[in-house]
Length: 244
Image (tube, rainbow, N blue to C red; front, top):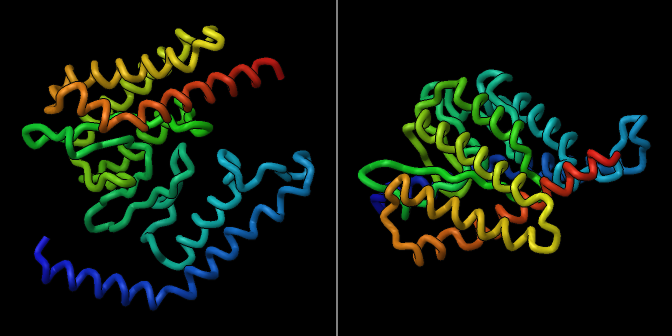
């Protein structure tokens, strides 16, 4: 980036941060407080003893969605929501139509870019993986027909129809992997890690990612572990729901 432009952007960011500091503090205070309204109430009375924990963020997300609309941070109420991972999802600018999509468009390492193409690989983080909800979120994002999506940690993505198709296919592959090993007992975790590793290497071959196997495993090392843990958590949750 041009150093002069970077300096200008830094100054503008500092100006906006100073302007909105009190507003941000008030929103944060309320978001921290919200679980207090739910943890001591019985579920039949609308309570949730786990409110505020992973997968129990509904009241906070609804509050944040409402405040984003109230302060005019989006042009239309339907331009803000949240994805299957609990990340706020909003159209940033009606003029550009770009969407901040949280984690629903997965991992997109720039090391994988080839011939001007970008690539995505789904994340199935522990306690948050819900395949139908994740696929619906991708469809919902694509229904806006955005020219670009901004993904947590990975910046702007384009060629979205292709990426969405890849993600849907790879989510199904993760589900199939989990279901193959659901009854593997103590060996399940290791087999899931091996399976996610194979999914990465197979996708690398399919897409002709420009990295050798050793470097791919370095780039995806933590993600392979987290995806495997997420599949285990999903299988455990499904088993609990079956027995209840």
